[in-house]
Amino acid sequence: VSCEGGCQNGGECISVNGVVKCLCASGWTGSRCQEAICPQGCRNNGACVAPGICSCPAGWVGGACHLAVCKLPCQHGGKCIAPNVCRCRLPYSGLQCTKKRKE
Picture 1 (cartoon, one colour):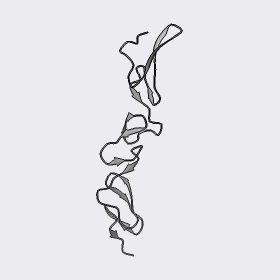
Picture 2: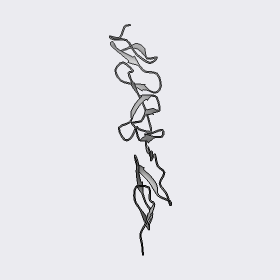
Picture 3: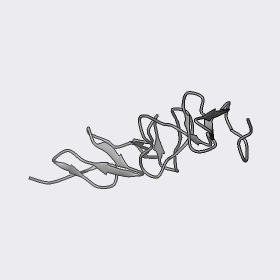
Picture 4: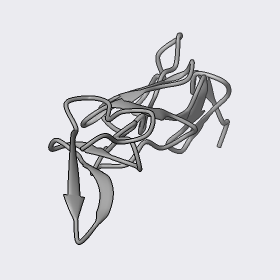
């Protein structure tokens, strides 16, 4: 049995009811087992490059590219919500939550 183009990533060429196809190894899908499966999904334009492994664009990290990176840390309890963007807690504001509003 021969699959046109071959099976990738450990896939096996099989014949089922006269139909030749690739039986993919765990974590892989696609007609030739060429697409990795990331059950957690890859957010923020990340790409699934191997089973369960996302390649994240600049400014994002984490298993699903879900954690933003702020090169300068957010201060006073602020949270990094996008690359180099802090969400500040009152009464603070500014790029790194360092400006305190005057009452």
